[in-house]
Length: 64
Image (cartoon, rainbow, N blue to C red; front, side, top):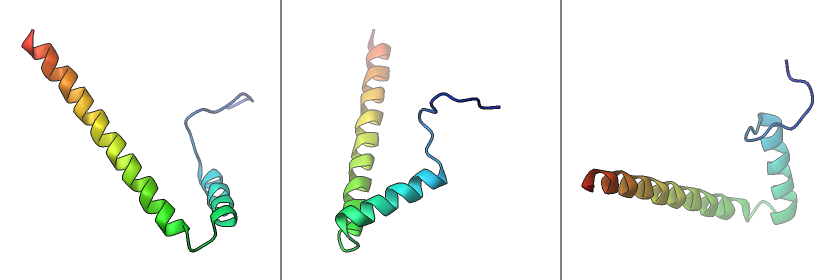
């Protein structure tokens, strides 16, 4: 049972709806697809860089 405090790292459906509505109000419906594409591209690049970094560390351990 959850009693108060702050939940970190968990975004539920209701939070996503609120974020979407705020983005819609701030940027307008014509800008949302462009923003979504940019956000997706940024996340994809971050994951790729993270994966390459981990692989670099792993291969560095094997060289020693």
